[in-house]
Each structure stands twice: as structure tokens, then as C-alpha cells.
Length: 260
Image (tube, rainbow, N blue to C red; front, side, top):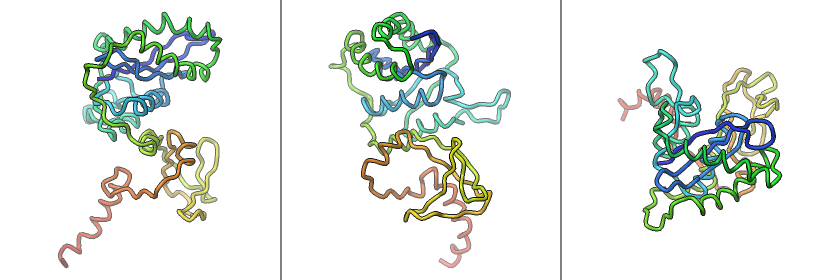
């Protein structure tokens, strides 16, 4: 089981930042860490990205009841317990179980790790002249290796419960950020203050009627996704992005059952 949490602290400089971490409950290994101004989807996505690339797919995450993990409206008993946010949905696609708790004592391993890092890491950052989040995230890559070598339990006689690492394309698309948009008068859609014209597989512009719904899929590491050669991938009809449209198509074809 992997415990996850974010700790707000003055890690460097004079401004507080949030350090997102993930700890292997069996060995105490710090398997992922990422600094961000706030406790965000971006921070936890980076932690998961480190875990997938370096260790594989864990079987379970234990977190607190933050809305970044699980969404439930207050006083609404009709919302099911497995109604997940975009972050939780990504975990489900990988087959990772998510447990949440509002009791800090239930996540003792990660809470103790936060205390240990708060007493040690700011000193290391100051000695290395770290003064920004970008520098801190670059520094933590080497720091995690030294920290685990000193404090984590040996894993020689412990059977790993991590599944095999997914390939780069699957990681990038699983950790994608999905956003709904509408096509405007110029057949474009606006995303992060930029306008984009949809194109087809041939690279030619595709024009849609104003108000047409569109989904923007922002891959986790777009540069790597574009640079690496990729084979054409056709999602199966059971894929979550296609299942709804496939079910609508099948309903329209119900009359063909009698012919068969």
C-alpha cells in the first residue's frame, strides 16, 4: 500500500509551498515527491508519474478525503461512493484501488515522513542554494535516492506487489487532463487563452458548427508523446471515451435484430 499526502511548509525562501509525497507503507521508501504552490492535481499526477516510471503500478493508494481524490456533495446521499474526480478516474484506469480517510492517525507512515522531511529537507535546499519550485523539483530527484538509501528498509526479501510499468504512451494518456469546450464561430476552440483549429488524420482542418461540443485531451508529457514514433492506435468500443457513443449506436440498430 502507498500512502499519499501533501505538506504545506516554508521549504525554501520565505513563501510556503506544498510538497506532495508518496510512501511505501511496507518499506518506508519515498517513492515520489513533487513541489507545487498548492495541493493540486498537477502535484499528485507528477508523483504518480514517478511511481509508474520507476516502480510500476501499485495495488492501492491510501489518502485523505481531499476533493482531488474523491468527489461527494455535502448532504447528498444519492451520490455514490465511487464517484471519482479526474484524478481518481485515472487511477481506476490503471486498476489501482483508492482508500480515503479523514483521520490523520490512520496514515501514520506518511504523516511521520512529512515531519522528517520538514526537519531535514529545508536545510538541504538552503545549503544547495535552492530558491524556486523549479529548482526544488529538480533537486528532489537526486535527494530521494540518497534519502531512501539511508532510511528505507532493504527489500531483498520482500516480494514486490507493483505491476509492470506501463509504456510511455499509456502513462501520458492515462495522466491526461480532460476538458470540455465548445466550437466557436471560426470553427476553433479556446484552451488556456489560446485558440486551436481541429484537424483530421490527414492534417487538414475540420470545420464544425458553432456550439459543437469538444473534448480537449492534454497529455501529461506532450513533448515526449509527439517526439517518439507512435503506431496508430484505435481504441476498442469498450474504451471509456467511446463506450457511450457505441451504446447510442447500438440502440439505433435495434431494429436489425429482427432481420437477423
